[in-house]
View (cartoon, one colour):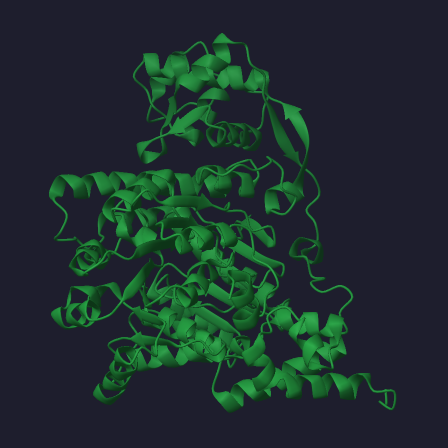
Length: 608
């Protein structure tokens, strides 16, 4: 059977998404591949389809038990022989899985990187025909990434223990060019086919807000989205507890998740969220990597994360099914100090020497400044983010808080010249100021800390401009790279600033327009043309089936599949197979139940 045939029969899709066919083709030619694809772009299909076509078994290396269990459950629901070996298994279950593996009944074996270094697992692997090794979340192998995990360094030594080298297919949603190069070297990928499908998620609305009262802003948002599923990320366990308590006190049911809870409570709260018993979960960044829940409508960051990689990955857990979703970040300058403290006091890794550790800290601080610029910058949020990851994007996306609140362009060439000139004269006096201090000098306000600045020829050169407007221009110059922000947020000139003056360049800055209503900003009309009554009946049917089979509702069918059912209203096997997300196994398992709902609803004798 062809790759496209397997895609339809096993997964229920008629065509591949961007990049999937190319990656699968190279794997089937037994060439290593490296796929960088955003969350929700369908990375798993890229290795699951060829795993069913290659002779032998595929080992999938994944960082979290929950991630492995979710993927295995989804595969088994599609009739695909997949299993998971993890530390949660009792001896009887472990032996039963091994027996199936030895009998050749398993095509995909999921396991954690820690298990690769154990002699018992290495003995098992040597007896098997391992055709492919897939590494999920492969950015974890690089110490220069945002989520380095030393256990990922077990992968290459494990590959070398096998009698024959299998194909390596590795995937991630977040990798800067530096991290991608590190991955290729650390895993010794052999002339890999590398594909970056782009980081843009057009269905996601990005927003940065600076509310006076974060808790009140959160309560107002959640109350305005009463039937939506969401994740709220907090920077500390204490805040998770506080925010969860306040939500519940306000009559908004929410569960909590952080490393300080017992394993039992963490597991229970996570399952309540996955199985739709709780529509809100408040968590630290310990939550999420193993969650493949497609119907998350919003992700709110109560605090600014310490790097853009983490933010992109966490925010990307919204809208995995392709529906419009919101990614909102509540920014406060206090978040910078908290993150700086966390960077300085992060746990020491014994595998890293002192010199490298200090280099990593400097790198983390640099990432923090990039994250700060995202929050305070005067440019399209999507453009800033995609540019950071080396992706191209228009400077106006129309679907972020900046683009929705800015329309006209204002010439700031003269102001930019004055600011650069002032910083140059300050540097001549060995003075380095932050944005607030520079604004004071430009507006002719004395600085107690640097009284000598009042003697400069550029002192008071922008006194006719308000403090707010001056700060906005300085912030914009930082976001465009004309000024550099270094340690302690001090402003520095760079080559780009020199060229601006030398070449007599011009510059314009976007100015604000009226802020849109919450209804406009959130993109509420998710499913135009869908019969809402029929959709809700199909949701009820799905919930009944999921409860009976002890599965998350989205494993039975996603909302996108139910919407396609509403559009096509199938009442025959062939018509049901034409629905996106319906394969042969799911037709046999669930077809009658859902088609009966559609028949009863569309019957001419139905009473309205």
